[in-house]
Length: 193
Length: 193
Image 1 (spheres, helix red, strand yellow):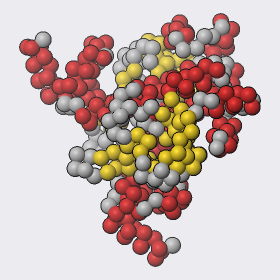
Image 2 (image 1 turned 135 degrees about the vertical axis):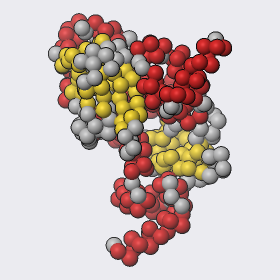
Image 3 (image 1 turned 90 degrees about the vertical axis):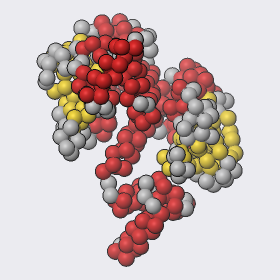
Image 4 (image 1 turned 30 degrees about the vertical axis):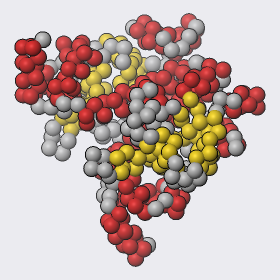
Protein backbone atom coordinates (compact mmCIF):
# COMPACT_ATOMS: atom_id res chain seq x y z
CA UNK A 1 0.00 0.00 0.00
CA UNK A 2 3.04 2.29 -0.25
CA UNK A 3 3.16 2.48 -4.06
CA UNK A 4 1.01 5.58 -4.37
CA UNK A 5 3.01 7.41 -1.68
CA UNK A 6 6.27 6.36 -3.31
CA UNK A 7 5.31 7.76 -6.70
CA UNK A 8 3.96 10.93 -5.05
CA UNK A 9 7.32 11.48 -3.36
CA UNK A 10 9.27 10.51 -6.50
CA UNK A 11 7.82 13.52 -8.33
CA UNK A 12 9.72 15.83 -5.95
CA UNK A 13 12.55 13.89 -4.34
CA UNK A 14 14.85 11.26 -5.80
CA UNK A 15 15.09 8.62 -3.08
CA UNK A 16 17.04 5.37 -3.11
CA UNK A 17 15.16 2.14 -2.31
CA UNK A 18 16.93 2.06 1.06
CA UNK A 19 15.76 5.55 1.89
CA UNK A 20 12.18 4.77 0.98
CA UNK A 21 12.38 1.52 2.95
CA UNK A 22 13.36 3.60 5.97
CA UNK A 23 10.52 6.08 5.34
CA UNK A 24 7.99 3.27 5.36
CA UNK A 25 8.96 2.43 8.94
CA UNK A 26 7.83 5.91 10.03
CA UNK A 27 4.23 5.61 8.82
CA UNK A 28 1.31 3.98 10.60
CA UNK A 29 -1.08 2.25 8.18
CA UNK A 30 -4.69 2.82 9.21
CA UNK A 31 -7.99 1.57 7.83
CA UNK A 32 -10.81 3.98 8.53
CA UNK A 33 -14.37 2.84 7.89
CA UNK A 34 -16.94 5.15 6.33
CA UNK A 35 -18.46 7.66 8.80
CA UNK A 36 -15.59 7.21 11.24
CA UNK A 37 -13.36 10.08 12.32
CA UNK A 38 -9.63 10.52 11.90
CA UNK A 39 -9.76 13.68 14.03
CA UNK A 40 -12.44 15.11 16.30
CA UNK A 41 -12.96 18.78 17.06
CA UNK A 42 -11.29 19.67 20.37
CA UNK A 43 -8.56 17.05 20.05
CA UNK A 44 -4.99 17.76 18.99
CA UNK A 45 -4.33 16.63 15.41
CA UNK A 46 -1.57 14.06 15.87
CA UNK A 47 -1.08 13.03 12.25
CA UNK A 48 -0.78 14.17 8.70
CA UNK A 49 -2.48 11.48 6.65
CA UNK A 50 -1.69 10.37 3.11
CA UNK A 51 -4.81 8.96 1.46
CA UNK A 52 -3.93 5.70 -0.25
CA UNK A 53 -7.57 4.78 -0.83
CA UNK A 54 -10.90 6.42 -0.13
CA UNK A 55 -12.21 9.90 0.43
CA UNK A 56 -12.40 12.13 3.52
CA UNK A 57 -13.80 15.49 4.44
CA UNK A 58 -12.68 18.13 6.96
CA UNK A 59 -15.51 20.14 8.48
CA UNK A 60 -16.38 22.51 11.27
CA UNK A 61 -19.71 23.14 12.98
CA UNK A 62 -20.82 26.73 13.64
CA UNK A 63 -22.71 28.03 16.70
CA UNK A 64 -26.05 27.33 14.94
CA UNK A 65 -25.07 23.70 14.40
CA UNK A 66 -24.49 24.07 10.65
CA UNK A 67 -21.63 22.05 9.16
CA UNK A 68 -19.13 23.78 6.88
CA UNK A 69 -16.86 21.61 4.77
CA UNK A 70 -13.36 23.03 4.55
CA UNK A 71 -11.68 20.38 2.45
CA UNK A 72 -12.09 17.06 0.72
CA UNK A 73 -9.20 14.62 0.32
CA UNK A 74 -8.95 11.92 -2.33
CA UNK A 75 -6.43 9.19 -3.12
CA UNK A 76 -2.97 10.69 -3.48
CA UNK A 77 -3.75 13.75 -1.31
CA UNK A 78 -2.53 14.63 2.13
CA UNK A 79 -5.01 15.70 4.79
CA UNK A 80 -4.62 17.11 8.30
CA UNK A 81 -5.31 20.11 10.46
CA UNK A 82 -1.83 21.42 9.89
CA UNK A 83 -2.15 24.21 12.43
CA UNK A 84 -3.09 21.86 15.26
CA UNK A 85 -0.46 19.35 14.07
CA UNK A 86 2.36 21.91 14.13
CA UNK A 87 1.35 23.74 17.32
CA UNK A 88 -0.27 20.94 19.40
CA UNK A 89 -3.25 23.23 20.00
CA UNK A 90 -6.72 21.61 19.96
CA UNK A 91 -8.28 21.46 16.52
CA UNK A 92 -11.47 23.26 15.50
CA UNK A 93 -12.09 20.62 12.83
CA UNK A 94 -13.36 17.11 12.39
CA UNK A 95 -11.90 14.86 9.69
CA UNK A 96 -14.26 12.06 8.68
CA UNK A 97 -14.09 9.25 6.12
CA UNK A 98 -16.86 9.51 3.52
CA UNK A 99 -15.86 6.12 2.08
CA UNK A 100 -13.95 3.18 3.57
CA UNK A 101 -10.42 4.57 3.47
CA UNK A 102 -6.83 3.43 3.82
CA UNK A 103 -4.43 5.97 5.22
CA UNK A 104 -0.74 6.31 6.00
CA UNK A 105 -0.28 8.37 9.14
CA UNK A 106 2.80 10.38 10.02
CA UNK A 107 3.30 11.77 13.53
CA UNK A 108 5.19 15.06 13.96
CA UNK A 109 8.15 13.40 15.69
CA UNK A 110 8.39 10.98 12.75
CA UNK A 111 8.21 13.84 10.26
CA UNK A 112 11.16 15.38 12.09
CA UNK A 113 12.98 12.06 12.07
CA UNK A 114 12.26 11.70 8.36
CA UNK A 115 14.03 14.96 7.41
CA UNK A 116 16.83 14.25 9.88
CA UNK A 117 17.65 10.91 8.30
CA UNK A 118 16.65 11.75 4.72
CA UNK A 119 17.29 15.50 4.24
CA UNK A 120 16.08 15.20 0.63
CA UNK A 121 12.57 15.07 2.09
CA UNK A 122 12.88 18.74 3.11
CA UNK A 123 12.23 19.62 -0.52
CA UNK A 124 9.13 17.42 -0.65
CA UNK A 125 7.71 19.00 2.50
CA UNK A 126 8.61 22.52 1.38
CA UNK A 127 6.77 22.10 -1.92
CA UNK A 128 3.76 20.45 -0.20
CA UNK A 129 3.56 23.48 2.09
CA UNK A 130 3.84 25.87 -0.85
CA UNK A 131 1.07 24.09 -2.73
CA UNK A 132 -1.09 24.05 0.39
CA UNK A 133 -0.47 27.78 0.77
CA UNK A 134 -1.49 28.45 -2.83
CA UNK A 135 -4.61 26.26 -2.61
CA UNK A 136 -5.75 27.79 0.69
CA UNK A 137 -5.23 31.32 -0.56
CA UNK A 138 -7.03 30.59 -3.84
CA UNK A 139 -9.95 29.03 -1.95
CA UNK A 140 -10.35 32.14 0.23
CA UNK A 141 -10.10 34.62 -2.65
CA UNK A 142 -12.48 32.67 -4.90
CA UNK A 143 -15.01 32.18 -2.11
CA UNK A 144 -15.12 35.96 -1.71
CA UNK A 145 -15.09 36.94 -5.38
CA UNK A 146 -16.95 34.28 -7.37
CA UNK A 147 -20.69 33.85 -7.86
CA UNK A 148 -22.27 30.56 -6.74
CA UNK A 149 -22.49 29.43 -10.37
CA UNK A 150 -18.83 30.23 -11.07
CA UNK A 151 -17.82 28.36 -7.92
CA UNK A 152 -19.72 25.25 -8.95
CA UNK A 153 -18.43 25.35 -12.55
CA UNK A 154 -14.86 25.65 -11.38
CA UNK A 155 -15.28 22.91 -8.79
CA UNK A 156 -16.75 20.60 -11.44
CA UNK A 157 -13.81 21.21 -13.79
CA UNK A 158 -11.18 20.91 -11.11
CA UNK A 159 -12.55 17.97 -9.11
CA UNK A 160 -14.92 15.93 -11.34
CA UNK A 161 -14.19 12.82 -9.26
CA UNK A 162 -15.33 14.44 -6.02
CA UNK A 163 -18.61 15.51 -7.67
CA UNK A 164 -19.17 11.86 -8.69
CA UNK A 165 -18.43 10.42 -5.26
CA UNK A 166 -19.84 12.94 -2.77
CA UNK A 167 -23.51 13.78 -2.02
CA UNK A 168 -24.70 17.08 -3.51
CA UNK A 169 -25.46 18.69 -0.14
CA UNK A 170 -21.78 18.28 0.81
CA UNK A 171 -20.63 19.98 -2.40
CA UNK A 172 -23.03 22.80 -1.52
CA UNK A 173 -21.56 23.00 1.99
CA UNK A 174 -18.03 23.16 0.59
CA UNK A 175 -19.02 25.92 -1.84
CA UNK A 176 -20.93 27.86 0.82
CA UNK A 177 -24.29 27.75 -0.98
CA UNK A 178 -27.61 26.11 -0.10
CA UNK A 179 -28.40 22.65 -1.53
CA UNK A 180 -31.55 24.08 -3.18
CA UNK A 181 -29.53 26.74 -4.93
CA UNK A 182 -27.01 24.15 -6.11
CA UNK A 183 -29.86 22.08 -7.61
CA UNK A 184 -31.05 25.11 -9.57
CA UNK A 185 -27.53 25.76 -10.87
CA UNK A 186 -27.22 22.11 -11.90
CA UNK A 187 -30.58 22.17 -13.66
CA UNK A 188 -29.57 25.31 -15.57
CA UNK A 189 -26.25 23.80 -16.58
CA UNK A 190 -27.90 20.63 -17.87
CA UNK A 191 -30.16 22.75 -20.07
CA UNK A 192 -27.40 24.94 -21.47
CA UNK A 193 -24.43 22.50 -21.69
CA UNK B 1 24.38 44.33 5.42
CA UNK B 2 24.19 40.53 5.25
CA UNK B 3 24.94 39.89 8.94
CA UNK B 4 21.33 39.85 10.06
CA UNK B 5 20.32 37.51 7.24
CA UNK B 6 23.27 35.25 8.00
CA UNK B 7 22.35 34.86 11.66
CA UNK B 8 18.68 34.34 10.72
CA UNK B 9 19.65 31.49 8.41
CA UNK B 10 22.17 30.09 10.93
CA UNK B 11 19.33 29.37 13.36
CA UNK B 12 17.94 26.78 10.92
CA UNK B 13 20.70 25.75 8.51
CA UNK B 14 24.37 25.16 9.14
CA UNK B 15 26.08 26.78 6.13
CA UNK B 16 29.79 27.02 5.36
CA UNK B 17 31.24 30.46 4.63
CA UNK B 18 31.53 29.46 0.95
CA UNK B 19 27.85 28.53 0.83
CA UNK B 20 26.78 31.80 2.39
CA UNK B 21 29.11 33.70 0.04
CA UNK B 22 27.28 32.06 -2.85
CA UNK B 23 23.87 32.91 -1.34
CA UNK B 24 24.83 36.57 -1.13
CA UNK B 25 25.25 36.66 -4.91
CA UNK B 26 21.56 35.74 -5.32
CA UNK B 27 20.14 38.71 -3.41
CA UNK B 28 19.54 42.22 -4.71
CA UNK B 29 20.22 44.89 -2.03
CA UNK B 30 17.59 47.63 -2.19
CA UNK B 31 17.15 50.87 -0.28
CA UNK B 32 13.52 51.90 -0.08
CA UNK B 33 12.70 55.39 1.18
CA UNK B 34 9.77 56.00 3.51
CA UNK B 35 6.37 56.12 1.75
CA UNK B 36 7.74 54.30 -1.30
CA UNK B 37 6.35 50.96 -2.50
CA UNK B 38 8.06 47.62 -2.84
CA UNK B 39 4.95 46.19 -4.50
CA UNK B 40 1.86 47.84 -5.96
CA UNK B 41 -1.59 46.27 -6.17
CA UNK B 42 -2.15 44.80 -9.62
CA UNK B 43 1.53 44.00 -10.21
CA UNK B 44 3.08 40.56 -9.86
CA UNK B 45 5.14 40.25 -6.68
CA UNK B 46 8.62 39.49 -8.02
CA UNK B 47 10.51 39.26 -4.73
CA UNK B 48 10.51 37.98 -1.23
CA UNK B 49 12.25 40.65 0.83
CA UNK B 50 14.34 40.21 3.95
CA UNK B 51 14.18 43.38 6.06
CA UNK B 52 17.70 44.30 7.15
CA UNK B 53 16.64 47.73 8.38
CA UNK B 54 13.36 49.62 8.61
CA UNK B 55 9.69 48.79 8.76
CA UNK B 56 7.08 48.02 6.08
CA UNK B 57 3.39 47.38 5.87
CA UNK B 58 1.29 45.27 3.51
CA UNK B 59 -2.19 46.61 2.88
CA UNK B 60 -5.20 46.30 0.63
CA UNK B 61 -7.87 48.86 -0.24
CA UNK B 62 -11.54 47.83 -0.21
CA UNK B 63 -14.28 48.98 -2.61
CA UNK B 64 -15.11 51.90 -0.29
CA UNK B 65 -11.51 53.12 -0.41
CA UNK B 66 -10.67 52.00 3.14
CA UNK B 67 -7.17 50.62 3.75
CA UNK B 68 -6.76 47.35 5.63
CA UNK B 69 -3.31 46.49 6.93
CA UNK B 70 -2.56 42.78 6.57
CA UNK B 71 0.97 42.65 7.92
CA UNK B 72 3.84 44.69 9.30
CA UNK B 73 7.47 43.65 8.78
CA UNK B 74 10.38 44.68 10.99
CA UNK B 75 14.13 44.07 10.88
CA UNK B 76 14.83 40.35 10.65
CA UNK B 77 11.46 39.50 9.07
CA UNK B 78 10.62 38.39 5.57
CA UNK B 79 7.85 40.12 3.67
CA UNK B 80 6.14 39.40 0.34
CA UNK B 81 2.84 38.53 -1.26
CA UNK B 82 3.78 34.87 -1.31
CA UNK B 83 0.76 33.85 -3.37
CA UNK B 84 1.56 36.25 -6.18
CA UNK B 85 5.28 35.39 -5.90
CA UNK B 86 4.68 31.66 -6.25
CA UNK B 87 1.95 31.81 -8.92
CA UNK B 88 2.92 34.95 -10.91
CA UNK B 89 -0.67 36.16 -10.59
CA UNK B 90 -1.20 39.91 -9.98
CA UNK B 91 -1.16 40.89 -6.33
CA UNK B 92 -4.09 42.36 -4.45
CA UNK B 93 -1.71 44.05 -2.02
CA UNK B 94 0.58 47.04 -1.74
CA UNK B 95 3.79 46.79 0.31
CA UNK B 96 5.05 50.19 1.46
CA UNK B 97 7.98 51.33 3.57
CA UNK B 98 6.85 53.16 6.73
CA UNK B 99 10.49 54.08 7.51
CA UNK B 100 13.58 54.35 5.30
CA UNK B 101 14.36 50.67 4.80
CA UNK B 102 17.12 48.42 3.56
CA UNK B 103 16.03 45.17 1.98
CA UNK B 104 17.54 42.06 0.48
CA UNK B 105 15.41 40.88 -2.43
CA UNK B 106 15.22 37.33 -3.72
CA UNK B 107 13.60 36.53 -7.07
CA UNK B 108 11.83 33.19 -7.51
CA UNK B 109 14.40 31.91 -10.01
CA UNK B 110 17.13 32.73 -7.49
CA UNK B 111 15.25 30.99 -4.71
CA UNK B 112 15.17 27.91 -6.94
CA UNK B 113 18.86 28.29 -7.71
CA UNK B 114 19.56 28.67 -3.99
CA UNK B 115 18.07 25.28 -3.07
CA UNK B 116 19.58 23.66 -6.15
CA UNK B 117 23.11 24.70 -5.19
CA UNK B 118 22.67 24.62 -1.39
CA UNK B 119 20.04 21.95 -0.63
CA UNK B 120 20.42 22.67 3.09
CA UNK B 121 18.35 25.79 2.43
CA UNK B 122 15.30 23.59 1.79
CA UNK B 123 15.00 23.21 5.56
CA UNK B 124 15.20 26.96 6.10
CA UNK B 125 12.45 27.60 3.53
CA UNK B 126 10.30 24.74 4.84
CA UNK B 127 10.37 26.11 8.37
CA UNK B 128 9.73 29.69 7.18
CA UNK B 129 6.65 28.42 5.35
CA UNK B 130 5.49 26.50 8.43
CA UNK B 131 5.88 29.55 10.63
CA UNK B 132 4.08 31.69 8.07
CA UNK B 133 1.26 29.13 8.01
CA UNK B 134 0.96 29.17 11.80
CA UNK B 135 1.05 32.98 12.01
CA UNK B 136 -1.54 33.43 9.24
CA UNK B 137 -3.87 30.88 10.75
CA UNK B 138 -3.52 32.38 14.24
CA UNK B 139 -4.20 35.86 12.87
CA UNK B 140 -7.44 34.69 11.22
CA UNK B 141 -8.71 32.76 14.25
CA UNK B 142 -7.88 35.54 16.72
CA UNK B 143 -9.44 38.21 14.50
CA UNK B 144 -12.68 36.21 14.60
CA UNK B 145 -12.66 35.22 18.26
CA UNK B 146 -11.05 38.04 20.27
CA UNK B 147 -12.58 41.27 21.49
CA UNK B 148 -10.99 44.55 20.35
CA UNK B 149 -9.38 44.98 23.77
CA UNK B 150 -7.94 41.45 23.77
CA UNK B 151 -6.57 42.02 20.27
CA UNK B 152 -4.81 45.22 21.32
CA UNK B 153 -3.41 43.72 24.53
CA UNK B 154 -2.02 40.74 22.67
CA UNK B 155 -0.56 42.92 19.91
CA UNK B 156 1.13 45.13 22.53
CA UNK B 157 2.70 42.11 24.23
CA UNK B 158 3.76 40.43 21.05
CA UNK B 159 5.00 43.44 19.06
CA UNK B 160 5.89 46.28 21.48
CA UNK B 161 8.37 47.66 18.93
CA UNK B 162 5.73 48.05 16.23
CA UNK B 163 3.47 49.92 18.66
CA UNK B 164 6.38 52.32 19.33
CA UNK B 165 7.19 52.93 15.69
CA UNK B 166 3.83 52.93 13.87
CA UNK B 167 1.02 55.54 14.03
CA UNK B 168 -1.99 54.50 16.11
CA UNK B 169 -4.43 54.58 13.21
CA UNK B 170 -2.36 51.91 11.45
CA UNK B 171 -2.42 49.66 14.51
CA UNK B 172 -6.21 50.14 14.50
CA UNK B 173 -6.35 49.22 10.80
CA UNK B 174 -4.29 46.07 11.43
CA UNK B 175 -6.54 45.06 14.33
CA UNK B 176 -9.74 45.82 12.39
CA UNK B 177 -11.04 48.43 14.85
CA UNK B 178 -11.65 52.17 14.52
CA UNK B 179 -8.93 54.61 15.66
CA UNK B 180 -11.42 56.21 18.10
CA UNK B 181 -12.14 52.85 19.69
CA UNK B 182 -8.41 52.12 19.97
CA UNK B 183 -7.91 55.46 21.78
CA UNK B 184 -10.59 54.52 24.30
CA UNK B 185 -8.97 51.12 24.90
CA UNK B 186 -5.58 52.79 25.41
CA UNK B 187 -7.04 55.33 27.82
CA UNK B 188 -8.64 52.53 29.85
CA UNK B 189 -5.40 50.54 29.93
CA UNK B 190 -3.43 53.57 31.15
CA UNK B 191 -5.89 53.98 34.00
CA UNK B 192 -5.89 50.34 35.06
CA UNK B 193 -2.25 49.33 34.40
